[in-house]
Image 1 (cartoon, rainbow, N blue to C red):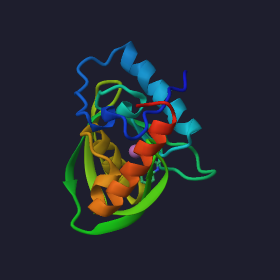
Image 2 (cartoon, protein in one colour; image 1 turned 90 degrees about the vertical axis):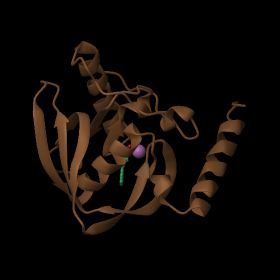
Image 3 (cartoon, helix red, strand yellow; image 1 turned 135 degrees about the vertical axis):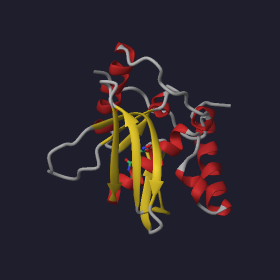
Length: 172
Ligand code: GNR
Ligand code: NI
């Protein structure tokens, strides 16, 4: 297993639409293993493949907290099949937007359909942190970031800060 480097804002890769996975081969298995290692090491509660530079529809997550037993979940081609009318606000962060947190309002519960690495279709109802995280991750697969849910003023402020940071690190 390998920790892969994280793609950070304003990398344009984060704005790309990820492609559905067609073959559940060894490369997908290795990618998922590396994503778990990268996510746990960060540490993060979720990770989309695009965040390690692979534009495929793959998500890893583990919404357990603290000393609870780990519950790693890998989702291939995940889809939200329903969302609750009741909403929940949650302070979100993103490994691709380090050290920035803001409240985002999203449906409190969602139904998710996905493929397992074994190629089995699974459906799960998610609530609490897991519901927020899977919506955040599926946004990544569609080139969307949690800052897109904020006001233009807040979003532009964050973008500007990260553009400036990138320049100072020897970018353009
Ligand atoms: O580690 C993460 N924590 C988090 C907290 C609230 C809402 C969403 C998240 S996902 C984030 C990791 C990440 O950037 N995943 O894409
Ligand atoms: Ni994120």
